[in-house]
Image (cartoon, rainbow, N blue to C red; front, side, top):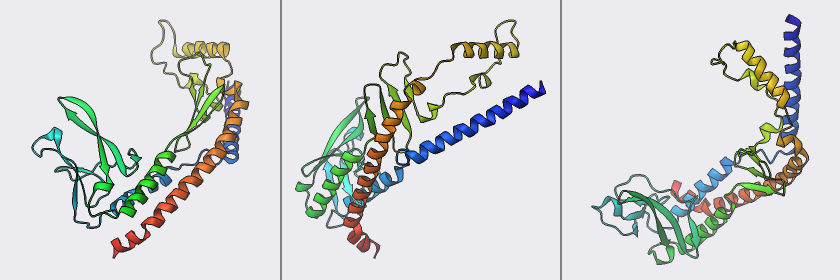
Length: 280
């Protein structure tokens, strides 16, 4: 009995070493796939807010972006005022951060405002036409809108799709693999499930068993069933396609990270003079 437990422990250690080796190799082979790029995106959003705040000529000005009655909660005006990084409802001390959800058409910045009307949630589209605002640096407005348009194009999750699967990767480098012809409803996998060899019996809760069953019997029945029904996962069957997709994704994401850094440097260069004056 003692020898069996010792063999199980040794086999588990070998398995974990092999699994560790596999993921280290995956990480080394496709380094750009799994990089966390949230910090880059947050920095771009931050720099765009600074660029937005550099547009007004007079920093004590206040602009009415949307008219409304001050005494009606559901029809409040929306202001653009210092520090000019956001748009504010009347009486609010915090603004509506629109950098990551606004759209641009010409000199018009548009975003949706969540409000309550007649007890129902609705979204009002707010348009900010910089060409009609007085006392602004029009060149700075154009710079901001150009950079924001580029940001809207870049701010997305990347994906590689073929006739077998779709590989999606998010900002944190987390993957989602969706198989097109999988019969099961839950057909989503990720890189962590490429090795799907967990002993699920060791994690199952056997506090409640069938009448007459002991906990050990419940383990035996579950493991016998698992051995009988054990089949390769979708990931194992389509490993070649997954690795080909990772190859393409690594190149795609490498170029994507370069584009993000290029945009960040461009916005930072436009903010240099304003930051210098602001800090004096």
